[in-house]
Length: 258
Image (cartoon, rainbow, N blue to C red; front, side):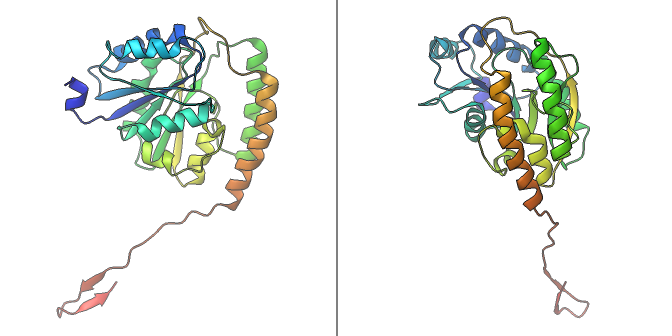
């Protein structure tokens, strides 16, 4: 039995992928290098029904990395569904997510863990903030405008909600409303649920191989509908503290309602 199987898992690293065959092994190696000896972890890859050799590479990788688990969607369902599938299957109380294209740096995960350890218990999400983007000029321009519009509508005080590297509590995530593209709105959704979020500056890298699965126009069209929906959810939400009423004995030994 592997070392990971013998210990309770503190962290599950969830990586959704679609047609990322050349990026799989390098990214797994970086995750392992960043976390072995730091915390008890597992890596959960969710293959969103890839049509290249990604499934073969993942299957072969299982024999080399005892921390690795592989899930495969029976039909392509999108990144948000892949993330949710991974989180539902995860064994860790906390989840770190990474995009499968290798642009997120796994070496930043310990930085997110340190931010969590220095925060209070009300913080349930630590979002990566790509201070220096390594995308094309058009993608940076589109993201900049999208962030401005989102920030004005949702007031989530998050400079980079689209960054793929995040750390969050599993239970808090699974309590959020699920919908396609929800992974782009996690800070706002966590805040809607009454939790605190924190942005943490992280590294960002150029894509070394493969192709982006999104284009600016398609992202914009989906984003308009999503923004309206999330804004509606926020307007309709109510969060309140809860006190439990218990019976306590008074000085005479009788039970008193407190």
